[in-house]
Amino acid sequence: MSLRVAGRWAGAFFLAAFVAYGAGSALAGHPAGVVLVLANSALVAAIGALAFRALRRVQPGAAWVYLVTRGAEAFLLAAGIVLRDRFGDGAGDLAYQLAMLALGLGSVPFCLTLARWHWLPRWLALWGTLGYALLAVGAAAELAGVAVGVALAVPGGLFEVVFGLRLLTRGFTSPGPAPGPRTSTSASGADAPATTGGAAAPNNTGGAAVPNTTGGADGVGAGGSRARRAALAAGLGLLLMAVLAGWANFGVVQPLVDTDAAATATRLPARQGALTLAVVALYTVACLDVLVGWALRAFFSRTRPTVALLSAWCRTGYAVVLAVALTHLIAVTGLLRDGAGADRLAADGPPRLTDFQQVWDLGLLLFGVHLLLVGWLAWRSDTVPTWLAALVAVAGAGYLADSVGSLLSADQPVQVSGVTFVGEVVLMGWLLTYAARHRSPGATPPDDAPDADRTGTARRATTLGRCGPS
Picture (cartoon, rainbow, N blue to C red):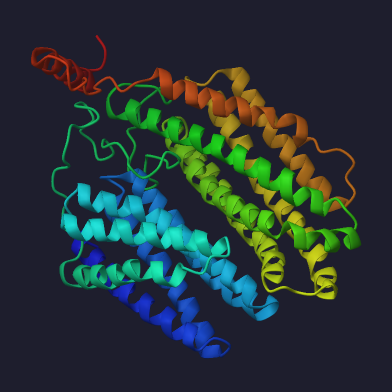
């Protein structure tokens, strides 16, 4: 499928999704409405896949962010229908606002990329950027209890209609030259441009061919630049995940799960705001899990491509299980937003919190396998030290032990991962150090550098990129 045809399909899906969700919302509570909302979720996921296909070679970071956030939006909109039917409007509205927050945040780098590569007129790309930013602000305000989301969603909604019509008539056109200096003169491959789509996005594509060279992730030219960007993306993603998951799980959720049911039901109303923030934080973690998994796949793709791909899919599967587990937290938070009484909270609150923990523990099976595969890849790599590979593998074994133990017994006395998780922390630090040390050999000199020096640097970078170090 050509870019032009893919763009026309994307335009048709933009318009069809707009109609499907509008009609489905109007028919809320009827089977036809459910079908239309589910159709909208399928269309949204297809839009993300088509945009990813178009952008992955020119701006892979923004392409990955857009794909993952569109997938999160599709999941949350579909889950919202089920949650609204079972737990009330509060849960359905919370899922919807989370979906709009993901859409808004993920679409800002998408629109900036369209402007950078001249796929849209600057005024239209600016409209989309501002519209989606306002959509994200409105969703965040709604989550905080300020009812301004509808008004702030109008510019973004109108942009999607105009953008869909433009794509329907013109499709995705071949990108023009990006303005400004390139990151690397030697990086003449498809993945050479630096990303603007957020620090936590992996900068290599799942489908793009990777040169089959010997050695680990290190290297010069485009391959070394991709490895550095992947290491930076994975390291920053792991760092952000550690902060968000640590606060949300150990600071908010676990204190509620670890108390008896009566005490939990009593404490829940006072924890509404904290639970809402915890849900947002943990859904962010689920999205970052996907991005980090594929960033690590990019980093190790020249070590053992098949194993690296399998490790990425394992972490993606774990992120999906985590997203499913979080629907139980959304249900509890939705009851609080609806002002449910003490009897309803006692009946549904503690069981949903327990279900969240149990489903998450089940997902840790996949997470443990992912870390074991990453440890094996690190051991096989010429770049990663052997001791680090061992620590990562031990961390994976710890998660597997905890997950299997929780399945066999609800009262597991020891959490092995509470000790072995150190391997993840060390991996995060090593990736960030690697990214800091391995600068692209063709980095553009500062703007105040003399012209002769800039020319010489570019010439040397080109020579390195073609021939390797002498």
